[in-house]
Length: 236
Image 1 (cartoon, rainbow, N blue to C red):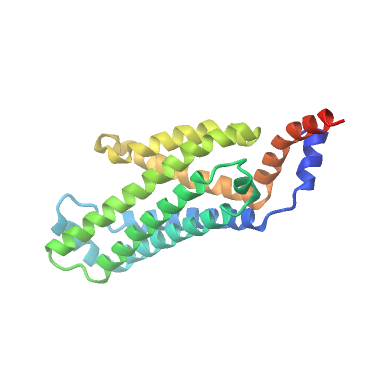
Image 2 (image 1 turned 90 degrees about the vertical axis):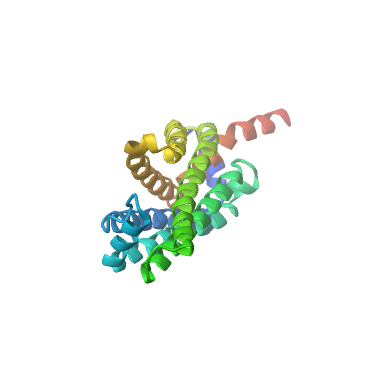
């Protein structure tokens, strides 16, 4: 960062909303890890609904913990988006509100998936139309939530690039990861779903830490400095 950029960054007050947003992103990442572990362990993703319900009934506590963790992960994304929308980076259009809004939509869909999983764990009865609909809702809302989060990463990549290093180093990863997350809809790409899911957790943690420590704000403030210096020189 140049001297001018440093002065510009120092002139910006630290935003508690950015730090809270980062904290909720980290919390969402942690809850997601718990959710994945407790969802995979019951082995409830079976081809037939009856087999899935039997697996859920056998390990209802563990499956319910996975649903609760997914619900918490989604809620944390919504809270993170709410705080990020209040930061000067978004309000002054250095970033775009589309990213936190997409994260909020992703959070709502993820929370719905978790809530339905909790319901299934509470009493996994014999297959019926309502149970089948609930199982489909859990699956589709989870897939949609993951896909929408990927769209948020794709949009974020452009603004990360504009902000300069170190966010510029993350931008290509955001673009590639967000694109890869859209493959969640393809059964043929099942092998990479675990990779993109793990990478998304790392992304949430990394960006969350950068927000929590103020590095994102300093970088965006520094990116504004050259334009500010030029305006001051032209007014002399």
